[in-house]
Length: 115
Image 1 (cartoon, rainbow, N blue to C red):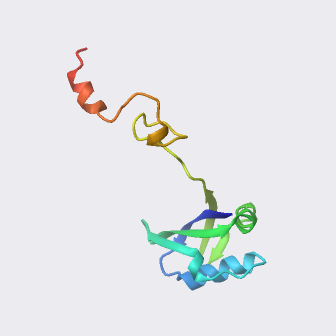
Image 2 (tube, one colour):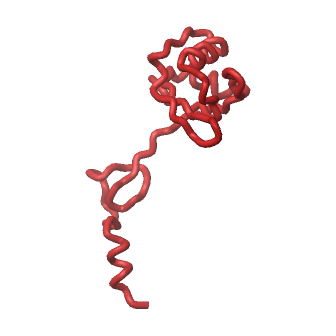
Image 3 (cartoon, rainbow, N blue to C red):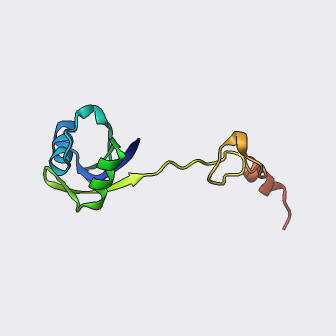
């Protein structure tokens, strides 16, 4: 089973090869750049990388200290999928399984209410 891992505070100058080498040095398995899905630039010259890893390797990375990639010391966290109903805006289910009230038009409903 694969898990999505988010690596934050990454230096913008870091390449996917640098990221793969740093993860491979921390774990027992070699990592290729195909596991790295995106590197999104952020504020202050930092970036966030999204990496798809096997669950065992992801847990091994998340339990350890911060990951050193280039000049940056990066934090690692496992990203858990969040299902959210689009009708009731509650978590844990999708639209086809939603039994709650429909809050999609809530701003329009609030305009019609009198206080």
